Length: 161
Image 1 (tube, rainbow, N blue to C red):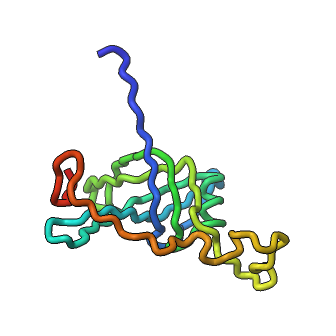
Image 2 (spheres, rainbow, N blue to C red):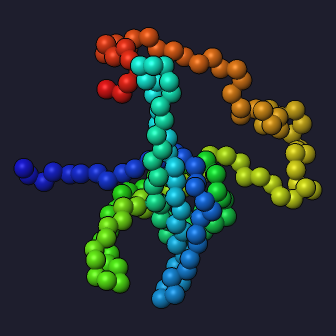
Image 3 (cartoon, rainbow, N blue to C red):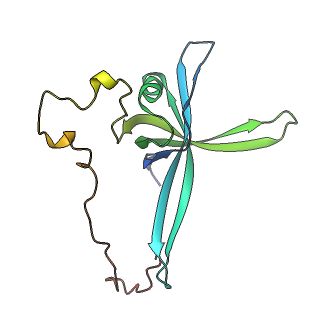
């Protein structure tokens, strides 16, 4: 095989499991943020019960991206992370090898507005009657749940294929 290219790219949308941990590397003063991100997937099983699984991802952000995490994210924040997967090897005090897989974030995008803690800067806007001023503007309004009887692949049980 001649000169095959590959790609290590990840895009995740999920919620932070806890507040990010922000540190500064003493040797160079660079900021680093680390946090866990939960993503969920689900399907309807043959007994018509919803089956859901949650995957936890360790995310690391450096420099400017770490500063953005510190200012805009907290436990429960709905967030999009773009980056690459890295597995690194390390040894504990007894010399035993361990492996850690993490997402190295290139870009972090909060997907929700952060709660404003200053009561003087609340819902009063220079744009009255703007739909974003309505607290329910971004909330789904009575969207019916879709039931799939059969799909084009002949998968009638609702199980993943």
